[in-house]
Image 1 (cartoon, rainbow over the protein chains, first blue to last red):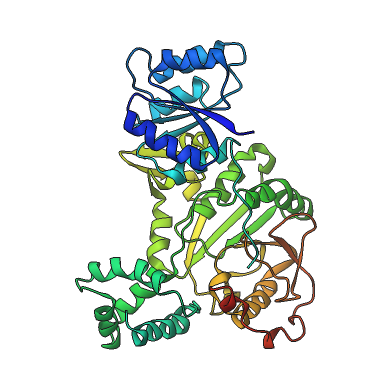
Image 2 (cartoon, rainbow over the protein chains, first blue to last red; image 1 turned 90 degrees about the vertical axis):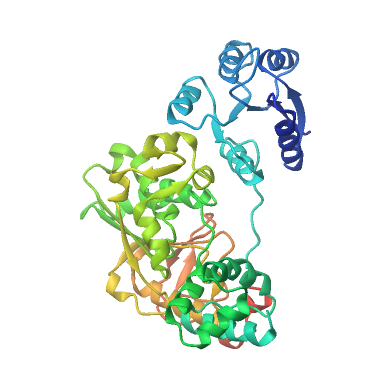
Length: 130
Length: 290
């Protein structure tokens, strides 16, 4: 069965780009526009993966993460931040808050694949011997 | 690019670096050399070739560098670094408990991601290695990539390929969009310019050699020759780590695979020799389009 990835991101363009990449990596993609929207999705069913923006209206990514990790089953999803907040303070704050990985925008398919591999969400195929 | 230009570049690269391009690698040359021709202020590869024929050794050096610089990233392929942590270092600590020193060679150190990944892996072992002297020597053909390796400065893109975020914040300092690996780790790695085609016995004897994703560029005879010399520059109980897509099988008896650890080899004690008839076998590298 396909793993599910929730994309939490207020920009529809970035959501679309992330969806295309994640579907290419074999994920079922669900979208949410902000943290509150994302919590509703997680209450219904915990996804295996969450790609999480930081700055969003209503509830930002960091506060969503703190809520998520206190929910029943909320420790299960692998959370990968994906944000323009590229400073080391933000990265440390995210790790302390329970994020598994952190992508500094701009991102591409290789970075998503590398980070998802890092947290065990995907395995890259073994190359053939030459 | 005209066929004669392509042949000229193929031969030049073979002579200068051992890089063995098959007949269908025009795209590779174009992708690597078009940026260089722009940098040199000429419109295309044909003009670059003219400059080279005119005897411009700086252009020749730049062409060789551009063609032999490999893509690399931190903890590339992961598994070799797990072998390093879980198998190689524990075995070496048993075997070297007397002298408490281990010498490591990154034979294609490139821009530093591999040697610094090893340095980080060693640091992560913490107190286990207290009192041990571990040397990491990184060599590469290209002085340009060695300079980058020495500086330890990487772009935001580079630090996001293979490097866990926890290690980024632990071992790197941020400077705007750039990240520099800390002085303590930089001090763990020594750099030397080296062409694997030439004698490397002056580097001394190693316990561990990482020689990944570089031999694929050489033809079979050159590979066999390098394997033989690697075996001679290595302690009898040392470890050789090859790239995920590389093997010694069918090429040399100088190394034998380490059981159940892909990509890991040890000297066999058979110093010379390749499998019978190997030298007359068709050039596998060429057949595989390398």
